[in-house]
Image 1: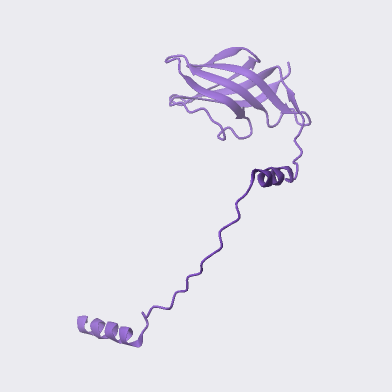
Image 2 (image 1 turned 180 degrees about the horizontal axis):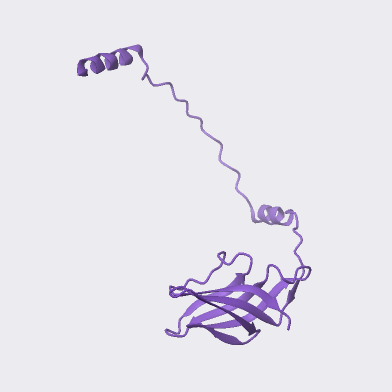
Length: 151
């Protein structure tokens, strides 16, 4: 069997099946250097995307999860105040929602601190429809925005 494979390999090599083809290399002209004016003009010529009007709520409805025991709690936090959600202290600075859809796509400006260590666990905007887009990264607890309230 080994002899057959050796003869077959020699026959393939003799036919030129593994011969290399000729490679052609082209030299390209360098790209023209862009100026600051070009980039500004390009930015200004972009189509404008309509942004929906947003209104501010008076409170944010948040959901908290204790990952260790699976306990869930919902907490309504008025703007400018903080509330304890399990082992976290959550401060809500702002909560906004689309004017034409008050129950959907809310986003809140949160500051979340771990009460045990005092470290800031999260600071920024969290979006209700995409909580993983800018999420709290904590080993035990999770908090996300459900909606804004106007009560």
